[in-house]
Image (cartoon, rainbow, N blue to C red; front, side, top):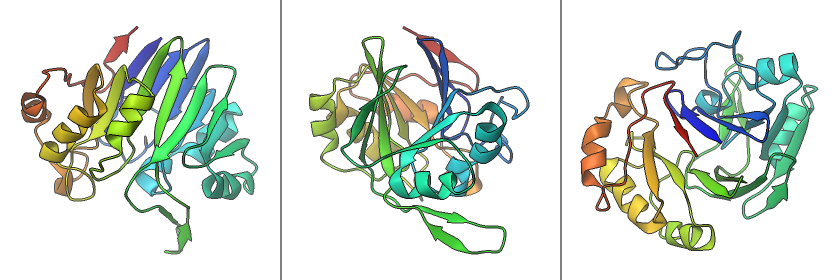
Amino acid sequence: MRVSYHGHSVVQINTNGKTILIDPFIKGNRLTDLTVEEVKPDVIILSHGHNDHVGDTVELATRHNALVIANHEIATFLGWQGINTHGLHIGGAYQFDFGKVKLTQAFHGSSYETENNELIYCGMPAGILVMSEGKTIYHAGDTGLFSDMKLIGERHPIDLAFLPIGDNFTMGPEDAAYAAKLLNAKTVVPMHYNTFPPIKQDPYQFIELLEDQNGKVLVPGEAIDF
């Protein structure tokens, strides 16, 4: 298994012959190393409906006939556009051919803004657990700190956790460091920072806040192999 980070909240997982993209915000993401023309996902997983997370899902899914996994509301909305989807919801899991996906709670908003300045309700935001090849990857999505992160870590021992540190819209570095303690993940990677001025942070300062010294900053395109 290879897990790579690609700026903002974009994470790619290569496992069991499949390429999985989480929150594929590529166009408009000045930090990413990916291009829509080059990336070829088999599966796309969405944490919530905000435009900087749904990103280029429709174009990528249409071009590559990718399966999109998301909450029921987002899956329904994308299904109306001819996308192949699988709807889940908070606490629900499903065994796919590449591994198991489970959605956890996240505390945030979830709506999609159309070109006509309409907001479409996109259900509950979520965190994402991907379990494959004996490893568990946790993508927290956009969220504030919540105490049940401890329960998530106890129920599903986490090998690698991606946590937002940008503040303003999500946890800041101090809360994210406390979240890492609750989750008890083996390795913690910061995400959702420096894409826009309100979420400017120093990820290396976040790493220094971790009690277990188990953090790693991934520059866009860098990967962790299991």
